[in-house]
Length: 293
Ligand code: GLU
Image (cartoon, rainbow, N blue to C red; front, side):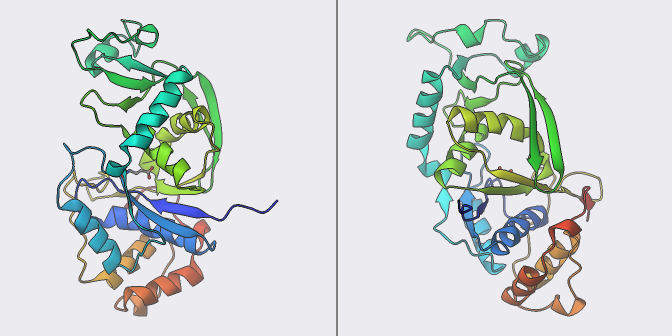
């Protein structure tokens, strides 16, 4: 049996321009794909118009291009994929793995995560006035899987208590559904992403299984923190990458990924530093804990 061709992806949510932390993730996923003769895809996870900025998509794509990170296929937008998500929800409903829920976070918190109205059993009536969310029905599990970098992982998955929203009451599809549907549809074999998403993995594995698809391999890289110990993110006002100095940015990203690029590569064009990185990428050098910049 021949192994499937490696297919990786970088999947930013366009809540703002690319910052250094997202460059590190993009670069690690790119290098993993390229050093395994794989394909590297870019997917814009634009599911939430309330949190997204209208200019962010253009800025992200421009930044990736400026840094020489060119996708092997046309960029996918999750905003074009509503039909596929509806179908996945229909499949989950038929399998008894999706249910309507009107509970607020506060209400759930006050009941230890249990749904006081027994949402899993409820049937939606056309007379229901309040908008309802839809949740995925998890199974209780002692989930174990292997992270390609962090090694063996274990997580308890608690049915009902952990059930993630897959369709929000505002009518937007949620990340936990869309990410799996698109990873399946795009034939993604390997996911490289920040360790802040590690806790999502056990739930996502169940969504893969419920959709009768083989889960990909996962590799979680350390989170990049600012000097106050917060993850670099738009919410924490991480500055946008300066697209005028792609070589320096890539050099620094390789540095925090533990790859020790030579000083003389600091000022070279992105293609050159990426060429060096493809020839020297060593996963084992990635630091095991979060990195402060
Ligand atoms: N869109 C997610 C984010 O920007 C990443 C999804 C993933 O890599 O699984 O945080």
